[in-house]
Amino acid sequence: MPARPPVIEPPAAPRARGVFAGLPPGTVRLIQITDPHLYADPAATLLGIDTLASLDAVLRLIREEALPADALLATGDLVHDGSAAGYARLRERLAATVRPAYALPGNHDDPAAMAAALREPPVTACRHVRFGDWSLVLLDSTTPGEDGGFLTAGELAALDEHLRTGARHAVVCLHHPPLPIGSAWLDDMALANADALFAIVDRHPSVRGVVFGHIHQPFDATRGGVRLLGTPSTCVQFAEVRPRFGVDTQPAGYRWLGLLPDGGIATGVRRLPAPASAVQLDAAGY
Ligand SMILES: [Fe+2]
Image (cartoon, rainbow, N blue to C red; front, side, top):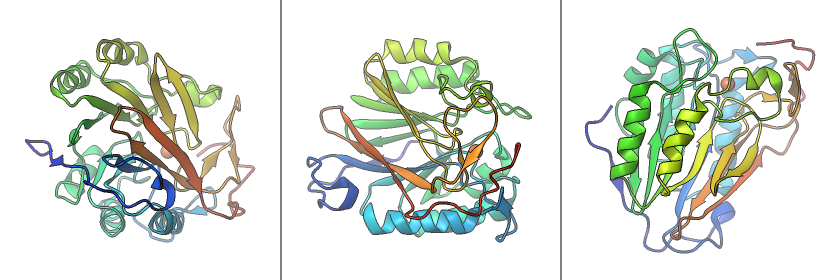
């Protein structure tokens, strides 16, 4: 983790292009990818989906329709098997797509392997990034050996401190969703102490959004004026609103976020053009 957060000034006059077209000058253009689940074996599949090929296709889509962007955010489950080779491959892919890129861990990640692989720019596992009037705070909501999320007292204190000393507007980023999304099996492994997170968020009106991964599907809600955003995985998609585990053939995708000078957030989800027909629809878990 770098001792001092990187400071990046937003562009004076962003070019209007692709998903960011029409946003006002001074907008911070951010790309979120999540849950790529890479393996040491570059040909490995998750529930029938070649996770590396699927990530590559999503990154190609980002290059076609979302560049230039100011930064990329990767919200966990970067690697499925905790392998150094998986992290190295992710690093190489992200560095060739959007610089800088910032990453936080998910329940499938190996914290030590991830920290070792993502220590140096342009792809770092960092905690706090500043873009002019906006800051991103990246949290670690993982607990070793557990699929569900929890923010330790140290993590909550660091968030509070970042928000006290941060920019005018802030986005809080973590792997686990801080609210139920309507699928019981996923809601059982959401963020267990979301109340503690929201107690801090409610004290800091600078917080404009909370962005997360883990659910492998899009989600968009508002709580007390704060946007709560979940995003499709770059590989397998979980079926929406299901009591038990289920996948579907929705294509992989990414989220774009325009962090506006007035504190608003413009955002949308983009997906690959073709359905994921190789996915194992009868899978009972993963
Ligand atoms: Fe995941």
